[in-house]
Amino acid sequence: MSTTEPLKSRVSVRKFTKQPIPQEILKDILECGRWAPSGLNNQPWFFVTVTIRDLLEQLAKCTSSGDVIQQSTACIAVFLDMPKGYHRTKDVQTMGACIENILLAVHMHGLGACWLGEILNKKEQVCIILNIPVDRFELMAVIAMGFPNEKTNRSNRVPLEEIWREEKFS
Ligand SMILES: Cc1cc2nc3c(=O)[nH]c(=O)nc-3n(C[C@H](O)[C@H](O)[C@H](O)COP(=O)(O)O)c2cc1C
Image (cartoon, rainbow, N blue to C red; front, side, top):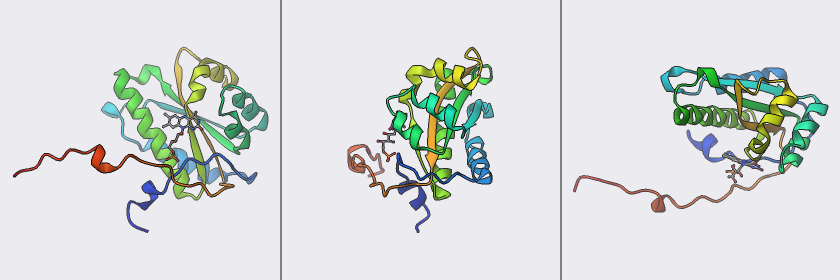
């Protein structure tokens, strides 16, 4: 495997087996999330892991991607801890970096995951389900995870030539 292959081979996985994720793997995945870069190193993230079936069912009802949550054995709700924020754009970018670290860690552990954003339409409802104060924590994403139950094809990307302009010395 080439050095960057883990980044290029990650895909969104939406179907999972029933095999639970070992606690130490879940913990390492969160460790990778917290090693993401952040503006001023403010580290404004907060994670809630959900493995209880009843809670997963309740979360599933909050999004049109509910079948992915129902299939999963664990979800990570990723929150922005707003009092730790200092600049809206940079704080949200930081959260994206954190979420991508989590996705890559999941993939490198041989698990699969899908970043769920549609659920943000019901972000207050998610806070209520997870007993999280709405005025302090803003939901950034739910990541549904598990052992992959399907071989997922890599999605397409726009060719590099279309999105790259090279300014070079002549
Ligand atoms: C901000 C964001 C929100 C997303 N929301 C959803 C979602 O609600 N449901 C879903 O099934 N996939 C969701 N995805 C996954 C994308 O559909 C997926 O990353 C994209 O199609 C590229 O496929 P790949 O991840 O396999 O490379 C989301 C991804 C991102 C980055």
